[in-house]
Length: 286
Image (cartoon, rainbow, N blue to C red; front, side):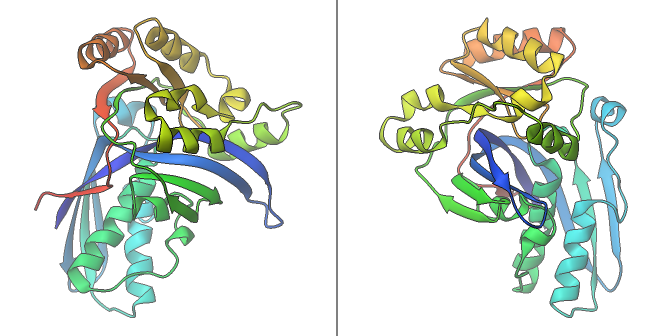
């Protein structure tokens, strides 16, 4: 079975506190976007095999482990162990989503493996958040209000069809380091997540006024500032870093303007793509 599995952006991302177990509580609006990895899963008699196809531009800046350290491998292992199955599978991942970008590239691959195995066997796993905080969201996709460590997911009004430019430089961000920086912020300016949710429901064309990401204050990457400057100088309504970084998305109303902006970013050496917000994570291709 082969699926295209979507990336996500955070239209808003805030950290609301630290839990007793050391994890951070977040408040966010997640949105799947039409930038995809392609994941192929085939059932076998035993064992888990994983292979990856990674563009040179990704591999040079963000090495992706293609062995048991990969979250997609861990997803298959969890699936078989929890369901008491003694079979195996062969997984192939063709990367289209940059890693260390704050777009859930690893988590969406893991969700795709769970989805494919579920479709092929009729079984599921009870706690996909064991694999990573973003994995449960990708099993639903679309537009959602996300709380806790990412496991509390509430679908909200559909925000699909919006034009985005997504860009990323060579700098990656360690999520752990980003959270440490959040903890050390003296006077954090929190996002207006509830206002964003209300706007998406009642006046979606105004929603971008409430886009925001607390991690921008904690990470402060020069490349993020450069990308935002290009986007805002080329008719983006808003430009925000996603996740803990380091990708940036810009919202546009005109595809031609978005494509011009993407070309300018590419000329400056950034990864850049034009896509739209989409209502689901998975597209079955085979």
